[in-house]
Amino acid sequence: MLNIAFLCLEWPSAVHSGGVARYAFRIATALASHVNLTVVTFENGTPIDGVRMVYIARPKSRFGRFYLAPFRARSALRMLDFDVLHSFGDDWALSRAGTPIIRTFLGSSLSEARSSLGLRKLNHYLLAATELVSKSSTKHRIAIGPDSYIRFDCHALMPPVVEVRRPTDVLSTIERSVVFVGSFAGRKRGWLVEDAVERAGRILGAHIQLTVIGPDTDVSSWRSTTTHISGASDSEVIRTISRAWVLMAPSLYEGFGIPVFEALSLSVPVVASSNPGTEYLRTLVGEGLALKIVPDDNDFASVLAQRLSTRTDISEMEAAQVRHSISALLIQASPLRLLEEYEGVLRQAMAGGRRR
Image (cartoon, rainbow, N blue to C red; front, side):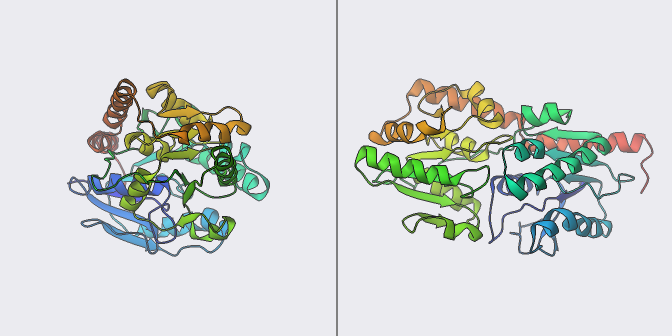
């Protein structure tokens, strides 16, 4: 079997399990029986049976996370023997000689910078420069969506998805409920979710339960009436989304939008803002009860109230369109297709006289 290394510092842990982390975890789980897989990530990352985990120290600052951790990852990788390295970011400090590298671009830091403020904006502009380094020095580039595909001139588009099924033992909540995945501040705009939920409740004259899946450092930002979950396992996230009446996703920028895809897969209606990720999904599934794009922030509360006024199931025609689109995305994202990428990259490297 091939010896594959993942460089993925965003990985499920007790600290936080974001969409990218959960995708990488799922794809690693699917590949584990097909390759000898090693994952380089931060300490306390969730292990996978049959996968070798190599941990580096988890930084305590934003500077350490984005500008020191890549050097620690480089040191860890130098101690390993593998045929192909698959990087999900943080690879700008690596040497490009020797072992072939596949880079998955998970979105654009430049676009994130344009949708951020203050130090976060500056940080993303700096990260955009590191992405250009990766683009210029990595021949084999995979994008998660059209935005990344065009910006980084990628050779393949593989959505960051695996099949998600609704748990048979999970029912929707009796009371009206909304789920949100992300932070209160920043591009995810949890503050807008909180405001929309409060105003929609006043419109309906009813309580709306808000559940947030986000980092543990963000708990104090939310009202005490909000249920906040951090460090949830992948299955716990799916169960939480499945219970909700609506998933809200007002992010200013997403390269794809994994929580939106998950909600669509689980037949949970989505109310979202327009960004490259949601627009891509809208071209596939259309717009209706399953996915509603809200162009004006002031309208989130009224749209949410409309969605929550009565419990309405997605029509069979719309559900069939969603299922068809999801099936097409899953074919594009097949782990076996990724395995073919590894084999092709290795053949090219061997034909070109790869140096160790």
